[in-house]
Length: 66
Image 1 (tube, rainbow, N blue to C red):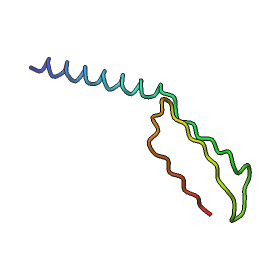
Image 2 (image 1 turned 180 degrees about the horizontal axis):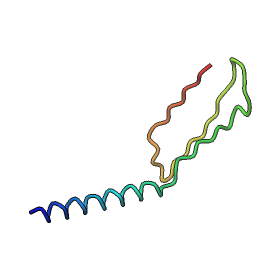
Image 3 (image 1 turned 90 degrees about the horizontal axis):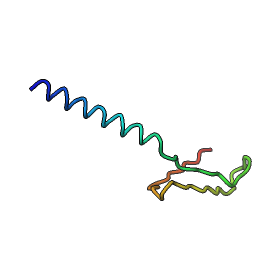
Image 4 (image 1 turned 120 degrees about the vertical axis):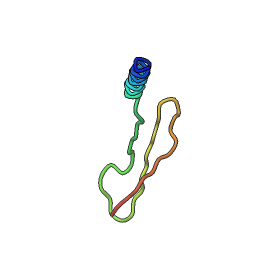
């Protein structure tokens, strides 16, 4: 019985290591700030392009602070 439990834990550990390794090999999302090129005052516009590999992009939150 103990041998089965150790075997099951070993298989689970190998599966977790493989999943972690494969998740780290993915292409990260690309975030490009196109406008403004430099600092601006109280008025200005923000232009951001966000791309994700294989269109797996769900949400994007941008917070501006003054």
